[in-house]
Image 1: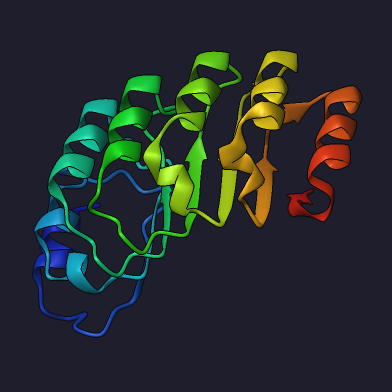
Image 2: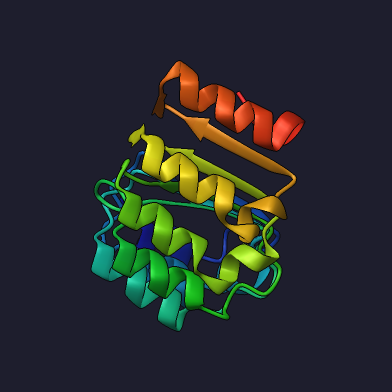
Length: 177
């Protein structure tokens, strides 16, 4: 998808929500960053758009989206701990309350997630993919940042019955299945 040509036009002056998920974005996230929409968007979904970890990092460092409330973003596969840290340390999303990301079942990713400042402003977190093992669940249960969430949702994530019960017991109704 030639997002630069589409977003470069002035056809969307009042657009608040943009869902480009599952489209290969030519030029990565640069056309979004450089468009006037960056200032006004409240919802942005760029899951599974073939974006590299470096493109996500560059986007997080350079974009300013003062009204963005919900962001769904993933790389070519899952976010790496490094790209997750860069995204999570960005102060360019002051109103962000909902984050949807793709993570592997790697405890390094969950550990990085638990330490990013962005988690302190979120009310909801949606995680796609991976295998949620005992170590990842323990991080979710022990880190205070996850306690602040109003909801925690896993999509296409493999969770065994014991870990699913641990999450239910700990998060109660906030654990959305």
